[in-house]
Image 1 (cartoon, protein in one colour):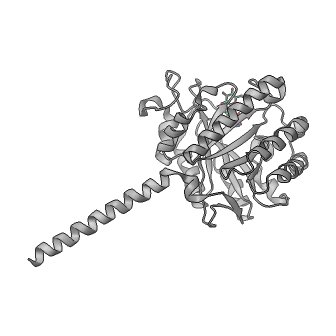
Image 2: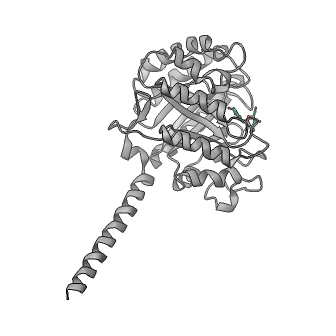
Image 3: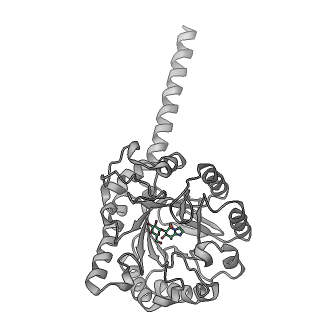
Length: 331
Ligand code: IDC
C-alpha cells in the first residue's frame, strides 16, 4: 500500500516535470515578442520589457532584391521552429539592385518587400531588423540624404511596432568609413529616427566591416537604446578578433552581432565549426545576440541552404548546408 502511494506520488511528480519542460519550450518558441515585448538596452545588455537579458538568435536574409523569395511568412515560421527569434532583412544600398541605385518604382518594391517581412515577423511574434546594407559604399555619409529619407519613413511607419530594430549602416569600411564619419552619420540618423520613433533599438555599424568595436568604445554615441554592430566569419577571424570583442564588452559597450558566418570572410571557402563553437561560447558567456548570414541557396559556404534546394520554406535537415546544420545545433 505504502509502495503504491510512493509510486503514484513519483508518477505524478514525473508527469508535472514533463509538462513543465514542454510548457517552457513552447513559451520559448511560441512567440518571443509576446513573451518579451519591446527590447531595450540596459548597460551593455539587450534586455526584454522586464529588464531581463534577451539573446537575439537570428538569421539574415541575403540581399532582399536578389533573393526576395525567402521573405515570406512560411519561411520565417520554419526558422522559428528551429529556435530563431529574429530575422534580419538585408537591403543593399548599392550593389545587387541596391536601393540607392534604383528608381522610385524599384524603391517602392523594396519597401513593400521589407513590409512583407515586418508583417510576417509580427504575425509570428518574431523580432525583425531593417538593415541598410552599405558595403561597396564604405562611407555611410555617401548616401546620407537617401538614408535620412528612408529612416524617416520606416521609422515613422513602424513606431508603434514593438518588434522592429533599425540597423543604420551594415559595414563601414575603407579610409572614409572611419569612426569620425560613422559618428557624424549616426548622430544625424539617430536624430532623424528619434523624431518619429522614440523607442526602437538603433544599431550602429563600426569601422573595418563592423569589427572595430574597440574604436567605438573609446567614443560611443549619446542616447538611449543604441547598440554597436560586430561581425565575424569564423574560418578567418579568430582569437585576435575575439580579444577585440572582449575588450569592448569589458568597457561596457552594448554589442550585437548582426552578421556572422563560420565560412571565410569572403562568405566562401572553408567552414570552421571548431572556431564557430569558440565564438558561440564567448557570445553565450556575455549573452550577446547573434544573427547568421545568410538565408539563401547561393552557391557559397555561408548560405544556409544547399544550392540544389528549391524550397523557400518548410525545409528538411537535408536541405541545409554544413553551416546550416551547425547553426541549428547552436539555436
Ligand atoms: C556577401 C554575399 C555574397 C556576395 C558578396 C558581395 O554572401 O553572395 O557576392 O557579399 O560582396 C559581409 C557583408 C555581406 C557579405 C558577407 C560574406 O556584410 O554582404 O555577403 N560578408 O562575404 N561582411 C563580411 C562578410
